[in-house]
Length: 320
Image (cartoon, rainbow, N blue to C red; front, side, top):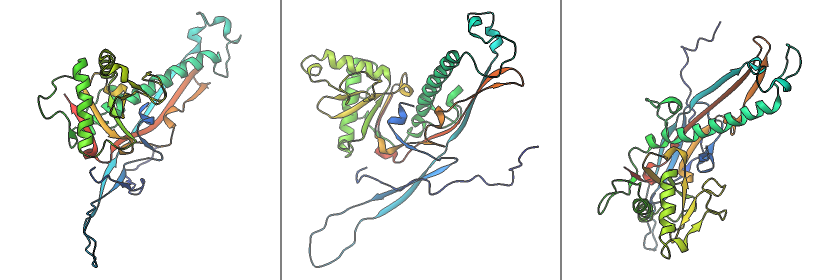
């Protein structure tokens, strides 16, 4: 017996998100974006963009400027992870002395082994989520990147191209190119009125981050001595403060797994980058049990996740 849902229309929630106000000029990633809970299916991102015009004061009233409402759809992917193990396979091995005597079992044991397994699963699933947030592609993404569209696909067009003017960069993978890329990002962000917001972030791969950091240190008195580290006060890219502040720009630069090896970098406001989940933290919840049916330890993980950008036109990019 099963549910027949062929007569139902897929539900799209039009009111899931609060309206967001545009600027006039308009997995680690969970801490670097706006996370929206309770996303169970395609949901709309309603947006407001208003034009403001100053006028000469006088005894009159002349309305000017418009408020424009637009929508972008955040479509989550539905994902599950199922695994199982037979603890009897471990009995002849190094766990023999830790297993409860007797052939019958009614619990997962030894506890520390399964805690290690769960810790590893947590780490690997979180990392793969982090990668798919950027590289996801429902039209043909490989392996774990096929369940939702990531930011690289969502930002393939419509962004502010910082790789213009002068000679365009043909690579990001030299110290000089890494430094110039960040400077171009900042210049474009500043020119378009985006550089003075406190939640602005330059997203880079770990490879580009390493080259940039080396370039700044090797800059000696020009950059090395002026190097400002992350808000936490150290340069550990995986510290809670994440990344570094480029000297003289007050621009936060954060390395992310999803951009490593992609030769792309983006500057965006955290409030402009959205990740929808069914419930906050549901991708960290695991269910494990000892199945008395087939005498195996089983694990199940289920979650929904999707990405969207409210205003692609407020994102600065360099895409090689």
